[in-house]
Length: 172
Image 1 (cartoon, rainbow, N blue to C red):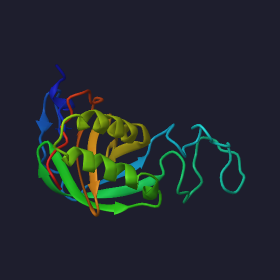
Image 2: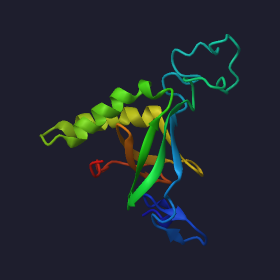
Image 3: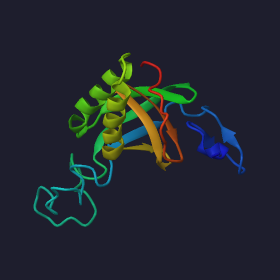
Image 4: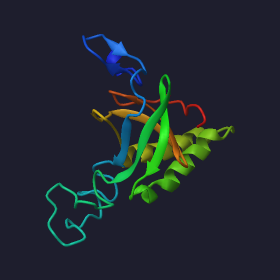
């Protein structure tokens, strides 16, 4: 069993077992970024090893580039916490078009109520996990379940990678 610091949506606040549940998240800005190795990231299949200007890549993206590792898909400004879910206003970034349809498909599948759709949802969400990194104000989180609809996003997160048994969560 994971320790209290690994709880979804929990934050360490002091001693080894001290945990502050959802308090203190309001107005935090979480970033939704391109994961290393995802399509469009340096070193990913199809990467030419150069930026748009033709300069060699040295593990860093060109300033202002809309593609590459760490490219901004968007930001979430937290305005509500319903443990273990955090939610907030989503502002799309320059690279969001690369994953917009993927998030729409994920949410449509999560809202369906017919037999067999969860296997398809798992495959779609697996692609989100491969392509997206959720970054807290303290740095990248190891596991997350993120939904985006229009200008709203809601998610739960963990200091440890999430396994099976994810639940789609409340509607936004």
